[in-house]
Image (cartoon, rainbow, N blue to C red):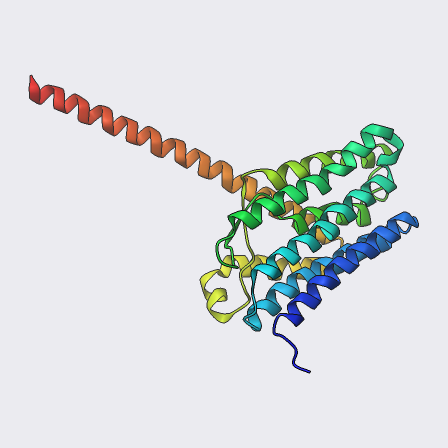
Length: 256
């Protein structure tokens, strides 16, 4: 039997969706720790399927669509249902709306990503990637919710994340895509790979607790870069306006 090159990356993509499904089952059974870990497993499968597609040179539109559908399950529906079951259900209709935001905005973000995608690789993302949004939420739940923070503070943070993460997903803030771990890319992006190594050491040393810190660093790095870019853009436009005014003034002097 001849196996298509698309089979291996598609298998990892399906495993991604399956982990999302298992996360939903775990949440419905009250096993919130298990639900979080299944989303982490889904994140790993999501990373591996892209790597497998590049290694087998089997990237395709089918793979892109399947990946997005799987991501909606694992990084949209699963974290939304987890947030609902762990606390937001207590807020009745408002809790339903709040918990649904991650799912709805993840679907919108992935749909936007697909129509904007040119080729099969992207150096930057518009808006926070759905896997990073889900990872931020579940790493908070796993290591901080009702653990380090008090019950009241934990609920406030959970509500805030349920609102802020969807907004960031659909924003136009640019986030860097992690480059392929090749020798040429390591030489080209030494700072990015240094940060990845430091983050990996931090996560291992803290037994996973550092995931939330890394997610916050990634989120705020994009926001900071966008503010710097906006500030530079304003300065450039102001400089162009000043230069135009000087040129107009010189032109008027010559005409006099």
